[in-house]
Structures are given as structure tokens and as C-alpha cells.
Image (cartoon, rainbow, N blue to C red; front, side):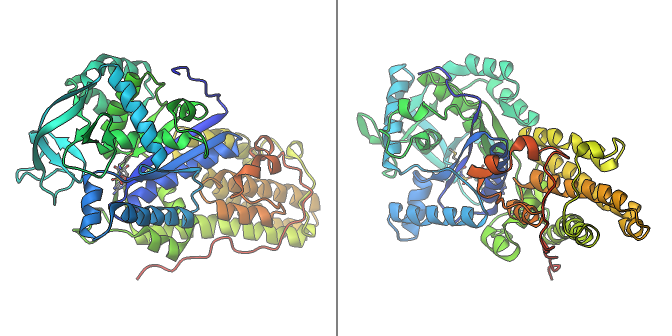
Length: 531
Ligand code: MSP
């Protein structure tokens, strides 16, 4: 079972499984938007993609929250899991599997995994003493805590002293193997700064960590010792494996790992890096399973330059944002404005300005004026030309021919904002090209062929831009493609490669140009500045 049989045409990507202690916040929306964008880019190229998201529902934090709300934990989890699905639906997230750690199938997978690790001699009973942050669901070293004993991440929560018998996982045994893993696979942890962070942490020496809790009901019992409940993180990480099962399949590790494992990319926030880049690979090594290809830890979002939090009263409600501005707008801002891996800020005035400038002005106007000219000067028919008809020195051809390669590389190397910027560069150059070559005056001078060559180059540039931005703004790209005379919908990703093959549509100047163009309609209405 340790062979990696997955073929290269498959791509598996995960978001974290979000805690259900509250309805989804903008941080969860951010990770999921990025994951969906990457998944859509892979689908565009014809990969078979599995995007997994879901909810992490066990543990003390969830049990207490449900209690405080006067709900049964399962009923409470069902309610919050539903609100995650609702947010993904309005954000136009095309997840393939929604993993819930309270799924009964998950229990079987956790049990089998626990037993495998145990049979390696990697689980033992001992006494755990230490400070536990319930909000992190993690033991903290005393030096990590603030002076008042509060957690340094959850500054409004006091860490709790624990002195109890726990089962431990023999993490220390994997020190060397992990160090080799990082050394031999420099891309395993990204970006570079996070990789260094992990390497330094591991260098200090790994301690075994406790994987069970007593006095906690909400979770799976430890096999053969039901007084103990499996630690929420041990259970949650395996929540990446259970959803790999097909619907009616028997829940065994072998079945789950047969098709989609290993994961190509675990996309997470920087605060949960240690669990994914140290604990998780060690657990998999112990169980004799192949390791994921990459863990990428993105940065944190702030609002108007300040840490977001309920105590500061400056949280950003993702439902409200999407309801006011639409899914494409929200997706575009977070992909374009934040360098993935760095912390990023949300400011509503900047949000409105960027969308107006990039989508309403640059892209929207480009389409609008181009279609208008084709109606007027070419009877609404796209000029019947091909790449060969366009001069090699044509600025748009120059920019267009290699664009797809660069942009796809940008997406795949997770430099999403750069990928986006490259497309915008073509869009802006197209507007400039129209201004400088003034087709209206050429038309007046009767230079029909010149006008057609020119408009062909611009049409191809708008089309290619819409195509390459479709993983980020699928609705706008669909509207552009439809106005250009195609019947495609970028949200119907399963059919995409048949209808508009990547080989043709990712290139500048190769799409058959015999289309009757549609009526120009604004693809993005200018937003009002916030008051
Ligand atoms: N349940 C665990 C993950 C288990 S994965 C097997 C968890 N859940 S969480 O809901 O607390 O956090 C989920 C993700 O949201 C993390 O990747 C975290 O980094 C991210 N974010 C939480 N606040 C954030 C911001 N303000 N900005 C960006 N992302 C942030 O941890």
C-alpha cells in the first residue's frame, strides 16, 4: 500500500477542515477561494481534479461551544457545517468532497490508522503535564505563553493546566526522516520562509506528542481504551483521507488511498503549519503511507491594517461582502491584491477602487468598445484571420503568444497575483493599442483590411484574457466568452475541455474566427465608493 500509484493526470488539493466553533469567517473564505482558483486552473488544462474542503467537528472547543449555545454537539455541528456549504455556494466554490470529521466512515478510517501506527510501536501511555490552549487545541510550552498565562494567538484565552494520563505518538522517532524529507524535497514546504521556520523547529529536537484526552466525550474513543478520546488534530488530519472514498465504498484505508492519494497540495494558513509539515508526515511515515507533495502556508488577513478579531469588533463578514459585491469581485480582490504567502490587508475603499479600475474600466471597457467597433466596422462578424495574418511585430501578438505559458506557470507555482497581473498587462496594452491605432479613423479612410487586422488582434487578446482569468472570475469570463459568440459556461468545468480545448483556447490566434458576436453588455458594473 505504500506505492504511489496515482497518475499524473490527477490533481488532489485540500483546504483546511474548518473548526465549527463559529460561522465561517473571511480567513476561511480566503483559503477556499485560492484553492478553488488553483483547482479550476488545473481543470482548465484537463486534469482530473479533486478539491476537498470540510469541517473539523470534534474536540473540547466544539463541545464547549455547543454547550454554551445550549445545543447537542452533533446538531450544532450540522448547523455550522451547513453555513460553510452556503458560503461556498455563494462564493462559487466547486468543491468535490466535503469532509466532516463526524462522518461515521471517518471513524473506521481513524480506527484503522490508529491501529497501524500502534502496531509499529509508535503509541504509548504516559503522563502529560502542561498548558493547554483550548482555542488552538494544542499544548503550549511555558515560554510560548504571554505573561498573564494567555495564549499568544488567542490573547483573550488563558491556557489551562493539565496533568493526566494520555497516549503519546512517538514523533521523536521520525526526526531524521523528516529532516531528510525537507532536504530532499525543497518544495515540500512553501513558501521558503515557512520552510525555514519548520526546519529550525525540527532542528531543536522533536518531542513525542499526546494524541488522546481524558474527560472529553466529543470525539472518537481510543481503540481498546474508551476512557480516552482521540486528540482532535490526530482525527482531523485523517479527515483528508476519508473523503477520498467513493460514496458507497467500504471505509478502509486501502480503498480510500487507491485513486486520489497522495494529495498534491495542502493549502493552509501559517498558524497550522507545524501540524501539516511535521506531525502529519510523521504520522504517515509511521503508517507506511506515501507523503503529500506540498504544503503551502499562506499569510493572515488584516482589516485596515489591524488584526481582525471579535474583540476588536472589526471582523469582515464574507456573506455580507459577497451579497453586496458578488462572488467574482470578492474572489478577484483576494487573488490579485495579496501575494500568496504574505499577510494581506482588506480595505473597502481599495477594494472598490481596484475592481472599478481593473474589471469595470480596463477589462469591461475593452470588451465593450471592441464589440462596438466590430458591429460597426465588420457587420458584427469576427474578422476571418489567423495568427499568420498578423504581423510578427504586432504588440498584442508579441504579448499574447507566450502569455498562457507564463500565466499557467504563475498559477501552478502559486504566484497567483503575478499570473493575474500578466493578464492585466495584455488588457491594458490592448486598450492602449486601440487608442494609438485609432481604427475609427482608418475606417473613415477606407482601410478596411487594416481595421480588420487590428480588431482581430484585440478580439483575440480579450478572449485570451477572459480565458486565463476564468479560474478567478468564472462568471465574468463566461459573460465575455458568450458576447464573443461562444456558448460555453466556465462554471461547467466537466465539459470545458471538450467545448473549448485547452490546446486551442490557451493560445493567441488559434481559435477559429468565424463567430457572430453578441450584443455588448457590461460585464462588471462600476461600484459605488463606500461611505
Ligand atoms: N481545524 C483546524 C484545521 C484542521 S485541518 C486538518 C483549524 N481550523 S480553523 O478554522 O481555526 O482555521 C482554518 C484556517 O483558517 C487556517 O488555515 C487559518 O490559518 C485560517 N485563518 C484563520 N484566521 C485567518 C485570517 N485572519 N487570515 C487568513 N487566514 C486565517 O485550524
